Length: 248
Image 1 (cartoon, rainbow, N blue to C red):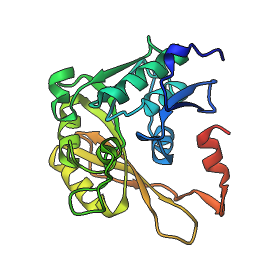
Image 2 (cartoon, rainbow, N blue to C red; image 1 turned 180 degrees about the vertical axis):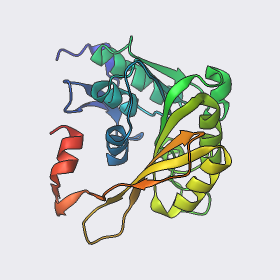
Image 3 (spheres, rainbow, N blue to C red; image 1 turned 45 degrees about the vertical axis):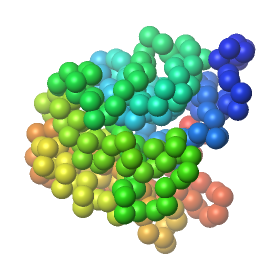
């Protein structure tokens, strides 16, 4: 792929996404996407002609992967940081995805005002995992915003999602198991009922360190717990399912 010089800024790199020859622009001094985003893109279901919004999209990794993996009509990413949203837009140009994906700069707390009520069939989010009680805040502002609830809380994400979704619309989120009680409780408060859950384990004999969750707006209260997703067979060796999700 020939890459125009104006698409890449100092300190940035281009990473291969191993699907449809798509690439993504990243800056290691800011925040690079992790496995959680990739797993969410594999867990979420998007049907033909559906409209999808990714809250806190960062470099646009989830919309780009979901455009590659699903039959959705159009994808939008919402990102509050100007430099990160600019990077995401340049990745769209790099992949010629400007007509399928939009990157909008704005605040998650104002998302329903930006886009309007009941505007999307699907909302995805890989939110900050830590609240004020958890962990040391990274001195780098971009990394801190990505990891800690500095600019928005878990309830902000869920409240706005409930407004943004059409009736029976679906919400997909990746988070940490230690927040699961809060997640399900707050979702239920806003009529987003948990319908499908999958726990992610680093090794078969270790505790889970991620949870993938599907909620339905106005759905019934019956939750399916899917089979565990194991990341590594042994140190440094992914399981076959993880390789498939990544597209190797």
